[in-house]
Length: 419
Figure 1 (cartoon, helix red, strand yellow):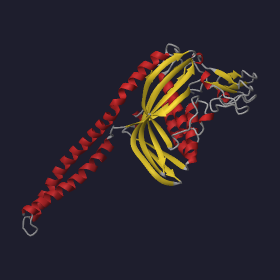
Figure 2: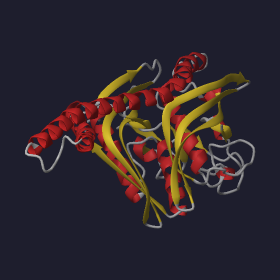
Figure 3: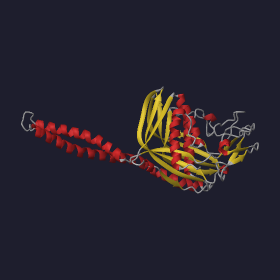
Figure 4: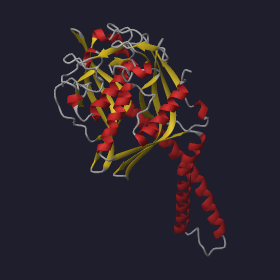
């Protein structure tokens, strides 16, 4: 039975929470996301950090908080952006001691990608030994001859996810927020009214009309406090929205330019190009570059030798924007240079701080590997010794040590740096 969007996003959130508890990557996530989650888990373990996520649904009608937007993909992929409102809490523990907790009302956006005409129940014949296995089994290699493959994921999968601050208010949350402003305002106004009348001598405890004047002070303080608190609360909401808008307005131009320009360029060589699927792939590469402990054996990196400069980052979240810096085709390879806008969580001396940052990344891929139609599967074998291994996770053959160039089959990173 095919999984629906509601079931997929609920499952992803549940598995995301379980990943922070057990370290097991979400099964509903793509293979790239799975690898990125595994690398992040190792980073957390190396620093003895535990990350705990809590998601609580909010809304006046929880059945209606999910919205779906179909993304136009003319090729073999079909994607939908599915979002849901949550109160999100992210807590960092260092050496089992609670160090930092971030709480906010957020919208989680998930990119759910499907492969058109894929039969997930189909069986395939191993190109190496001829043994017949189902697709899910072959993702981990042929059980008969142990041959590994570079192949399409088993869709539907969550290929990308990110969080955006939610400014929407439910009736209950609006009333609670309003009360937090009105009650203190009333107390202050009553105190100011009483103090003023005491100074003016109109509020004399020994006078016969003291009770009446006191009631008048309280009544006027309630009216003034309610009005002042209401105004302050509305202004705080407007200020919060404008603050968020001010931070986002500079991101709109690069976001819309990339969304329009990159598909136009890529369609020249790949009529199956999916912008959203590409973004999901790029974000997974960013996380791999940040969380990898050894670039020399990272399959997706084929740039100049360098050390990881981001070992203090323990979590990274996409801000929903990619800038396209350049695009060109040289010989058999397509080169794309992008800037990814993200929020990082860095650990230093036992404390965790949150910061908005930008990362620039140059990637390339063999254009002859781009045009595969439908479901594709390719045997991986070392050109030096012929051994088969997981070339998506290891750059060097574990048997003879020679490099396998993943760029002939998939996107690889040539350069990566913080802007």
